[in-house]
Length: 249
Ligand code: SF4
Image (cartoon, rainbow, N blue to C red; front, top):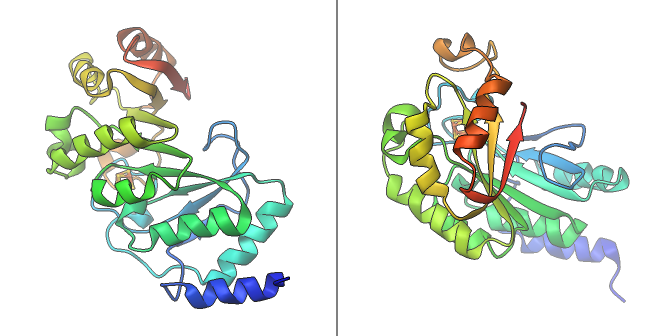
């Protein structure tokens, strides 16, 4: 019988990358980041969008050096002992990292975690490779597709549409989601988003929360989304998906 330590050595020697692509992780597991899971949250650095309202501004821009596999292994072992049953791979934008498939398989095969992948939809090619491996995908629909260049600095909206189509047809389970900024997400914007997500399995409307560290000053003082606006949008978006969720109302 092969010993666990031997298996581990074998896995390490077979790894394509020297270090993992995880930049950081939350010390405490989360009950809100992965539906029906007690989940550890891992961050990948780097993102090609320039969202002025980004809550993880330190992870925007270029990729930064990741944690060693040994550190990641120790963190996962602790999470496992603490009853964690899922992991969230978020960012930044996880699909920008070349070794994402390797990381997903590490979480699944070594620790038996279910894996949720967060994405902005900018890399449908890599997403297509990851979809058979992950258990849940959450993709941001930032705004109506024609306004992506202005709002998030990304102009190849054909890629966003491709990711949406892929997730609808190939993901085991998924959601599309929009963080609602009242001055941006007008009824007109939301009507366009309705058409984009129409027929989806799940769509979530999330409250925007201002913070002092947001990249663009205008968003630091933008008010939090009101419960009243989220309820209005719940009516406006009714029927766009099998399941419609409000978060932060
Ligand atoms: S896509 Fe996400 S991580 Fe990238 S800049 Fe926008 S909010 Fe930040």
